[in-house]
Image (cartoon, rainbow, N blue to C red):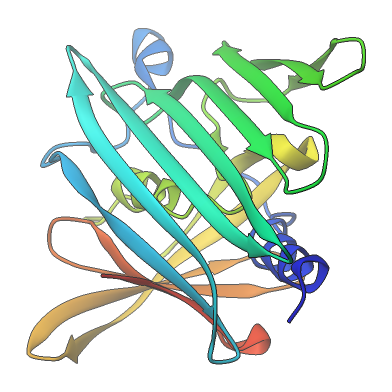
Length: 243
């Protein structure tokens, strides 16, 4: 598999979130008397994901989710093999205690290509994105949502699915919909997340969450601490496994 093929697979895996409607309220919503998403039981986390496509290695992500006062910070660095080198992506997401995004920064350094960096800030349903491409003028975009709460799931940063798993209302279960922003593709949309069943995997009880868009289904295997241990896309013969 060459670097272009790998990049196409990654985009296929994690740029598919167009579908339903709905939201999970954050602190701003609480001020209006709305119910906040349950975020109790959040814990700090650190680890590595290994990406495999059709049985072949396709990338590694190192990540950390840590508390910062009343907020949480999720950081990840992904290295993607490319012909003659490695492409690298880093991301830093700040979220409130309910999981609502506050800010997001990413840097994408494709092997042999131009570097791209961006910052996204969130406030009351408005996501403002400032982007800088190497050798080009910076530009800004605004994305307006009907709700102040948005899930952020960027290409190739798999630890962000743990944030999604923690926002999901486990007491309510059932199908829940979330507005989504994919910054690298400048794509807003929605996804549906639904608890499917519990599974015993190597003696450990894991919950299966199914993430659906209009085009694709992604399976998340989640432990009792709401850590995503495995991500699978059966249609693409791709999976992301925690080491």
